[in-house]
Image 1 (tube, rainbow, N blue to C red):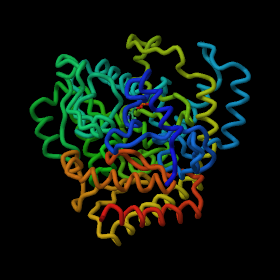
Image 2 (cartoon, helix red, strand yellow; image 1 turned 180 degrees about the vertical axis):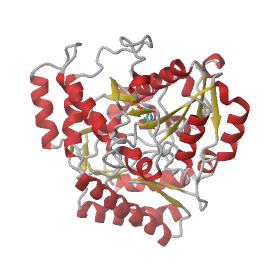
Image 3 (spheres, helix red, strand yellow; image 1 turned 90 degrees about the vertical axis):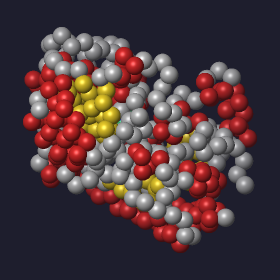
Image 4 (cartoon, rainbow, N blue to C red; image 1 turned 135 degrees about the vertical axis):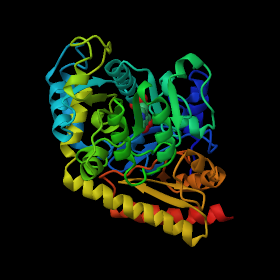
Length: 433
Ligand code: PLP
């Protein structure tokens, strides 16, 4: 039995000053029960909690830590950036270099604007789409999460799904009346909606692949269909690549599947990987739409720390390590880890659906394939909680929710994979008890 007495003490103390003891809801372990671990150190594929317990990390800060923790290249670049000041609130070379790197990887991003979180990137994309089209309606998919802005916090994934909340109090009907929610992968529902209200729709937004209700890959051709139907109706297509951007390939989800299937969104949102673990996100798209942003145009958007020199340095240093070799390694690690766990669950006769999209994957504790949010909600979340705690106890840290993707990093070793496979066998047996 590992002890986590010091984590418990910190959590008790945190709960007296921070709501729920956490700065973001899913970290609270509410859906799996127990005490969240308080982490103090990471190196490569491992993280250590305040009690000195070591874990193989399959959360990766929910995506950003693609090259592992405290990578020496990133650390040395960030250190030297810090020594020159952490912020000027004025333009700097770092943001230009990072914007150029993003545009080189995703040429449809003729212009890029930096913000500090994925939530803000999506807010900006939505505002731009409305301004560009002169229309109000935004279409989103049930179970997709696009951050916690009012208008998109409707039938949302991530923490909202984990906590089983329908929507959020504090968000008024007025704020969501222009948001239409459609089941994911449902071509007919989209055709009906566009037939009825096509001329009012400013944009369709989707996660490049949904990964905030667990991993639910788009059915073949679905993103291309969204691209085509928006174009035909004068609406914009916003591809939310906050999670997938520069994780799935050199050019993100679009760089792999968009190129292959010949579709391109009008606007992209990025976050996570492009900040290398620092608060940084971006919106990108065609010059004609992006130049609507102030001060070129009149669509207002701003941020004290936007394009921060330390964050852009961390992002650039991380992207410098994101080469084709890394993507091959992520893909093969995802396959190895995912199949080892799925095999362990099968051997113990635990019903599950192992779902992958690029190098993202997750396990639904149900025998059915999951293709939308309603399917995802049918899983046995209490089985997941048992599996989660057994893995944690054995030194494997995975997302504390049945509705989240698991993340591999380039720092995972063969020993880590062996350890994960052994722990998964024990955990699977415990689910079956
Ligand atoms: N969009 C997607 C697809 C995400 O996964 C997230 C966060 O997980 C966001 C937007 C919001 O990003 P942030 O948490 O940086 O506000």
